[in-house]
Length: 232
Image 1 (cartoon, rainbow, N blue to C red):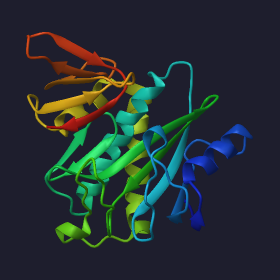
Image 2 (cartoon, rainbow, N blue to C red):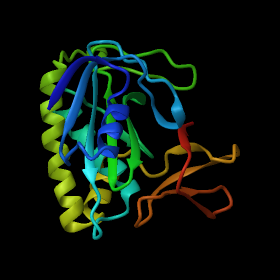
Image 3 (cartoon, helix red, strand yellow):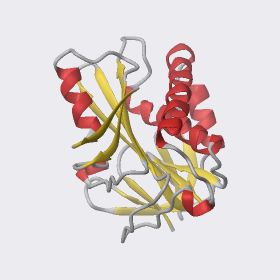
């Protein structure tokens, strides 16, 4: 685990190293503060000191499950780490969020450079931003005080263990764990699709490849491979 006081983005740093062939699988880079942190679709990620901001790297192998399913691996690892440090009432939300009492406490960003997938995690330990489109929270809001360096070690251990299962056993045990830690089947969701349209439905699990299944009002199902999801 390498830690720096400040950088633009841990994901950007590891992507540059990966492209240059200078980063090995299992490396973690953590920053106390980021000046250009980002979430999915280029959204800014507020990155003041006190929270966890870190990225790791996976080198893909021919027999690995589909690379996008590493988001599920990261999700179950982040949920496990937050729970170990006092997080309760946690729920995973597809594709890459962790909620605490219905408010976002963590997010995950996957980016790829050749055979390398960089996985960035941001976890609100000490404070949280105020966002117009969704509620947010932190562990500190719920009475837990966590040192980011200690949290980093917990997360790295958890991610390594779940990555080994993903690689050795396939997606099935990861998908099962994710579903066990997700909001309940039947939760009302709004899905915003990449083309800008929206679909309302009820959460009906994940398919065998990790895509979101929405149960529609007419009884049909919508299988979603990309987009944003919001609790109604």
